[in-house]
Length: 227
Image 1 (cartoon, helix red, strand yellow):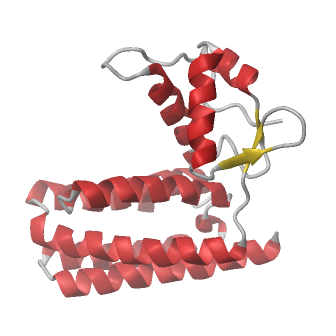
Image 2 (tube, one colour):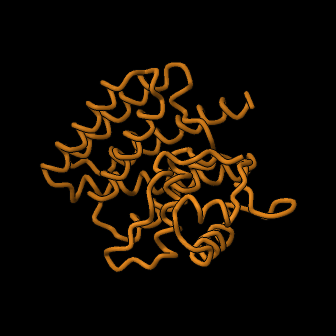
Image 3 (tube, rainbow, N blue to C red):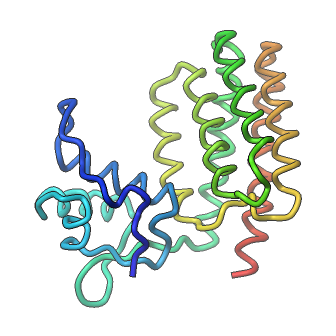
């Protein structure tokens, strides 16, 4: 049985000119990112429609888009199942993430405004203040940190690609902040990246960002070994 997303009591917002199928699709992607759905969970058209209080047509459209992107696969009987990435896919995912995060940090060093750099420091301070026992909150702040760098890069194509990559990362399960010592080392890595961006050092920012993702991969592989 799939976990009920945290906002399961709500309905899909119909304002803003967003097509209903798109709204359902984004809701499901957000549920994946939040960990409400995990690898192996089943998604049934009727259950999703009831939860979001919409008809089955936009749900069918949204589930079809998830399947086309490879996030879900047909399950025995009715419904779809959230995919579990194999080790080769994990390595490919982190290889691409290293390239993209490095590029984002380099571009942010060129384009980030002073308020954006201050915002990065604020996010990182919130990360430090988050309880080490609350890995989910640390993961949320970590996503906010990387999204802020990507926005500061001023490249809409990089931003869009990074958002899609985050959807894939959501399929990996538990955050790497559950690995002993990772919150502390991640904070140090984040701080150095911010300092390089503030110093307008694109080369250094890219090198640090890429090293940061390689360390995240090392922790991810540790988690996978325990499964």
